[in-house]
Figure (cartoon, rainbow, N blue to C red):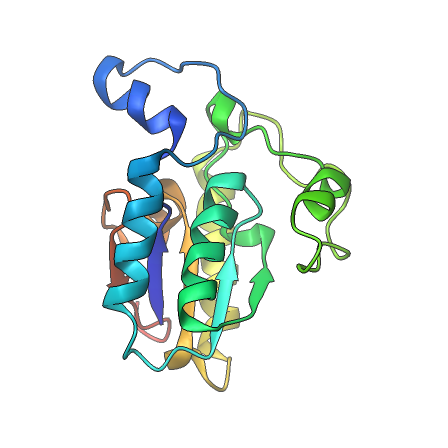
Length: 175
């Protein structure tokens, strides 16, 4: 499986300099973030990906849309791979609005408000990571899955901190 951190968002631009939450709910990608998503798509062109899974946050959906278009892949939305809910950027967009913005994607399995309160605990994050790992370990074609996710989720799953637009291989059967 390939894990991809979304491209740079409006939140990341401010937070990386100030280390303070700029108060931007569900931020969009910056131009640099779109460039990073294109670079990931180019890097994965020969990776034999069959399925692209994405978090329902806007920055992940925009990243996934760029990758999906370049690699001709369908996108499946999975709220389990969302960010560790701690900052204003982790306040999501309601399902009905996401469905209007991305009419080709299926959001029907999400509740209208799919993100938790901003006090998600480390234990809750690790529980989501374990559930996802277990589910993916049983996936018959996990090697051909790419997941567009977030710093906190990827770190919780792998123990590795990744930068915007970075991707890494991950074996859900290990660990």
